[in-house]
Amino acid sequence: MEDQLTADFYDYEALLPDEERKLLLRVRDFMRTEVKPLVNEYWAKGEFPHELVGKFRELGLAGLPYEGYGEHLPATSHLLSGMMAMEMTRTDPSVATFFGVHNGLAMYSIYSGGDQEQRDRWLPSMAAMDKIGAFAMTEPLGGSDVAGGMRTTAKRDGDTWILNGAKKWIGNATFADLVIVWARDVDDNHVKGFVVEKDSPGFVPVKIENKFAFRIVENAEITLTDVRVPEANRLQGINSFRDVAEILRATRGGVAWQALGVMIGAYELALDYAKEREQFGRPIARFQLVQDLLVKSLGNITASWGMLTQLARLQDAGIFKDEHSSLAKAFVTSRMREVVAWGREIFGGNGIVLDNDIMRFFTDAEAIYSFEGTREMNTLIVGKAITGQSAFV
Image (cartoon, rainbow, N blue to C red; front, side):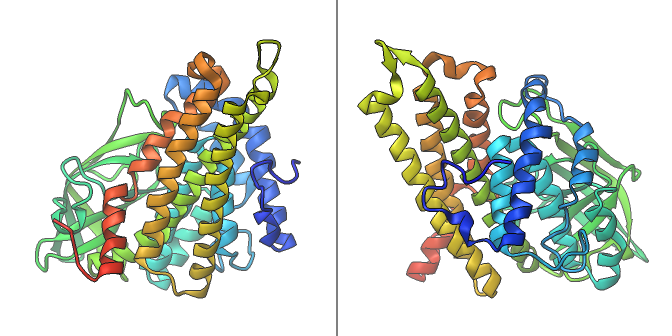
């Protein structure tokens, strides 16, 4: 196993207790030995390596953030959860997103929005990765305005609900066993959450082709036509979009950790290449302008890691707010864009070849920059918090 990362200039990993660091190193070894050899092949094909599901099952780390689920361990810290997301993304953002959608968005929706019976019904099999989850909120005609503009509807009919509408960009949806679908109740106009099971009549996910980011993630466009969902599958703790926002607030910080992982992955590739690539009779790492790009990248990584470490502490203390995770997502993803561009610049023309890996991070960064709230929307959330004035349209 690798020891401290070259990008961990201030030794942030030392903040983890020994048992948690062992888990992080376990993830690091898994990503290096099981995932890294596969990613370029599947990225080129635009397909998900389904053989990895069984390997993730053997890894046994799904469900760790949720006390009582996942390897029968006590709930772990948000700092470990964040560093695990970082570690996975450091190897491949797409595979990390597969796990994040399942372990974060889908499982957390049930853990925080379901009642005890629902948690006990679904989370053990999801923690074992016998059932894979997805999270369906974004719609073909709606993104940032989803809070007030959700078009997917839910109509109560006795002990069932009838769902109609469409969702888009839904990761894992083509093969997920359980999809968390968000819909607006036509009677009270409030958003509610429903666990839709695979192969439900009227539920049709279609893989989105020709993507140039997150090519390994199987994003789908979903149509829902008179999909019947039992009341027992409605998340009992979700009664309005305010409840949904609690879920997004928690998971948005995880996306910022992914952005940190992208930065670290790109920086490590660029640093290794600069040491090996020779021009004018010496390694380009000896050139002042190359060192400038590397140091600026390391500065972005170190500053972002510090911000996210404090965010994790606020989460563990239960006092973090929307604006805290929004500032992290907006800031860290912006710094990520800089680092992947500088990394590709160091590679020169060789940077556009998939075999050198850097272009995977360059393109995947664009997806991370946009989802879980754009930079603009997260900026306005923070702006409202610091000024007391809402600039939302």
